[in-house]
Length: 123
Image (cartoon, rainbow, N blue to C red; front, side, top):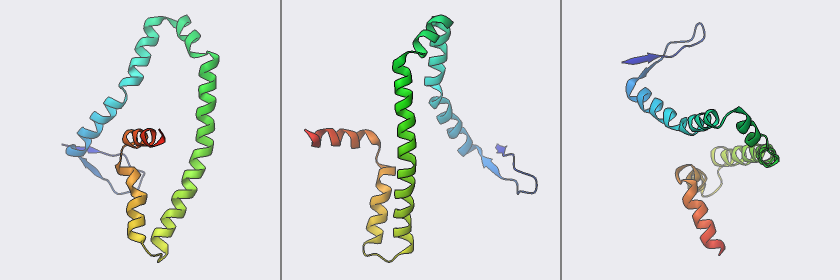
């Protein structure tokens, strides 16, 4: 069984195999569980309570912190990432391969062990 992907006019058609589509749909469904829980909880508590809990000053403070983190972290990460990629791919600096592996390591190692290690080393 193959799912057909909608492409712009003139683009070649691509068929996704079910072996790829089924796990992707399963992961997407699992990722939506917290959102579904919040919606169900909001419907159970009633609109007035939901609005009261959602629009508290603390929620706005957390939202502002999130936006500030976004505004600062995205440009910083993009700058560092592009510079590191350029250094690894476009120069002949010694240790390029080791540097490439070290730069890719955070993509392989989950954040929770890294956070735990930082807490342990901090104490």
